[in-house]
Image (cartoon, rainbow, N blue to C red; front, side):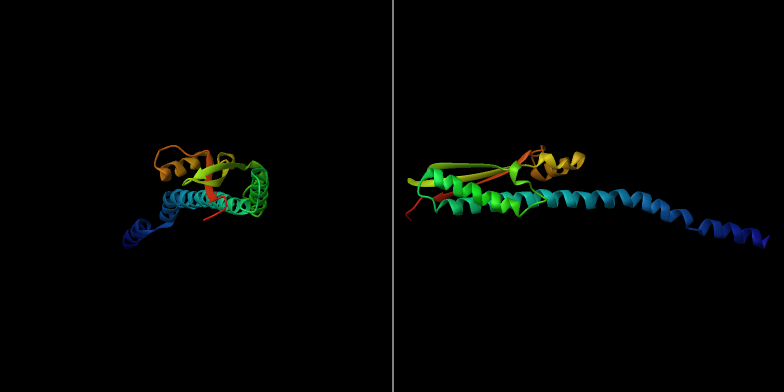
Length: 153
């Protein structure tokens, strides 16, 4: 009789299935956290590359004498910079817009860079970015503009 109670007590205190159950409950949350972090890192790296490209393009445009030269210098610099971000970014997918403008009553030059992030194929994880953005809708492109003075102070 004593043996029967000993076996029953051991069966009740055994944790053979508890580890599998804990793994089944925790693994999806852990994987969601890991993949969500990776997707946000890719999105953030793209955003940093676009900001960097527009700033470098605007800086390079200062060397031009005409708007055509400024545009060419800016586009070449942005292309060279985004080439350094390969294989994450494809420089051919970036849209570079240059424009002569006026800022503070003085001539200026604006360089804008846009890159489509919808091409990454994040799937339903892409909705996580929308929750960070606050408006409930995931952006399809990342863009940034920099305006520099066109001579003078």
